[in-house]
Image (cartoon, rainbow, N blue to C red; front, side, top):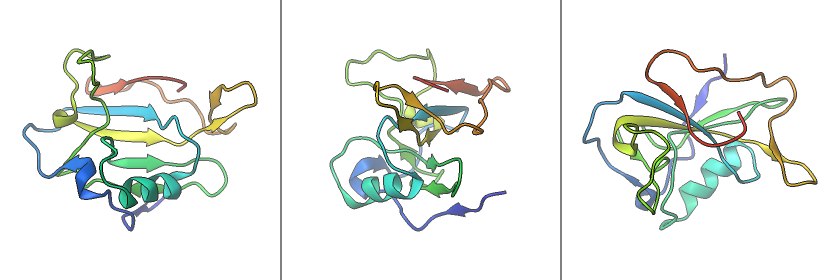
Amino acid sequence: MLEINKSRLCHPENDTRGRREPITYLAIHYVGALGNARENAQYYGSRGGIGASAHYFVDHGPGAAIYQSVPEGHTAWHCGRSDGKYKHPKCRNANSIGIEMCCRKDKSGTWYFDPGAGRLRPGPAGFIRLGGAI
C-alpha cells in the first residue's frame, strides 16, 4: 500500500478552509495536465489564485505516489464550474473529496493512464466519476 505524502500542501488561496457540509461523495477526475502526483501537488501548492485544487493527486505505474494537497477537513475546488452547470445533481466541492488521477497524453492528444493502472469502477452509492478517461 502506498503511503500518502503530505509534504506539498495546496496554496491557501486555492481552497476553502473548513467544510460547510459533511463528506458524502468521492469525485475522481483526471488532472488534464501533464506531470506526476508530486509535480501537480507542487504546482497547486506554489501558486495562489489558480481557482482549482484537489484533496489528492494520484500517480500510477512505475514510481506510483499519492500526494495529499488539501486536508479532508477543508474544501478543495475540484468539481465546480464557472457556468454553474454540473455533471452530477448533488456532488459539489462542499460535500466531496476530490481525487485527481495523473495521466499522460499521446501524440494524437488523447489522455491515457499507464498500462497496468487498471480501470476504476463505480462502487458504493457515494462514488461518482466526473469527466474523462477512466
